[in-house]
Image 1: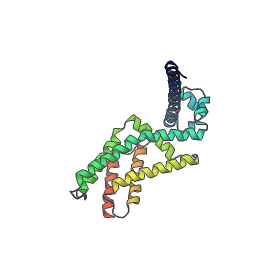
Image 2: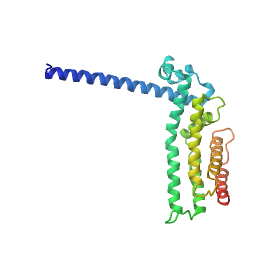
Image 3: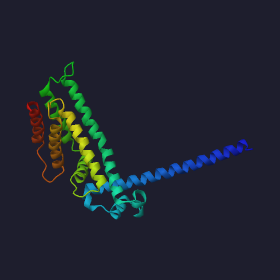
Image 4: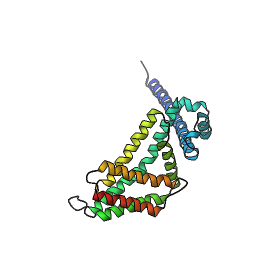
Length: 229
């Protein structure tokens, strides 16, 4: 028969073990996040070609063995870093989508039909103008990282598939902007808008940035062309 005090002792011991497990898990997640952030920082500063277990461990301030302990292979580490990049990018995509929905509500009639087409097009121009003009350092680093993943020639197969899925997601976002204007070629129109926006984005972090005003004109002219297609 177990006394009440014995039961309390066992409960206390169990709680202590659980607390230790939780602290260990928290410590593990902190270390993994340090390694992944260091990986993304290296990609932003020096490109994918700069990555190695040793360079990442040094940048993260951890022992070399920890990169393989937590991620086993270099491909797993790179894939996890890409997932963190996507996590960091989600608020940007969500804000763009919400801004488009707000603009749409301002340009439709009671039946939900787009009647203020020119206002919608110039409104999108305003959205992208503000988007490109924000020029936040964090966003610039995201674009630098994105360009490295998007245009890498040799990626592990699993990561290459993830990048393809990410591109498909971006096309869906672009199609959301084109849908009120596009009659019969929504997928093609979305792909065209994405191509223009990505050109403007990546040129912003390249050696020959495009003119912002010209970029807006490109977007608006393209959207007006969708009305005539």
